[in-house]
Length: 190
Image (cartoon, one colour):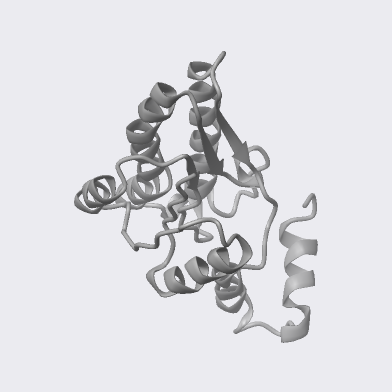
């Protein structure tokens, strides 16, 4: 099985080593591409013309007031969070259907179905991913190809840690309370 990953360049070698260690019979190959850029997607397709598993985990987020979001910002979020994964699925899905095997997994977010109101530009794109995955899954009916969505709740990633710093560094909330305050006051349903 061919496993290809698209991750931050700094993480590529570490992830490849970890996979080789845990699954010695595999031959993972690492490469870093900015898949929000059409030219780099084409380079990715040339380097990896066939894959068995595609995990669309690329995304950007930022809390923003709806009234402050420019048209350019809306477009940027759609380009990065939606069109990038759509382009990958559009390239790889026909090949998966042809070989009658493949997995496409979109990583969406609870924001797709329970928007917080704090980042509408992000929520919209995750809803788009959810809808795309559902539509693509209809194309795979009766095959050994699946398309699914994983919708995690808020996860303490580097990006979320930075968001907490941005939100709380100039407040009276003690640093050791940032996470609990955020969950209580900004994500009470999570």
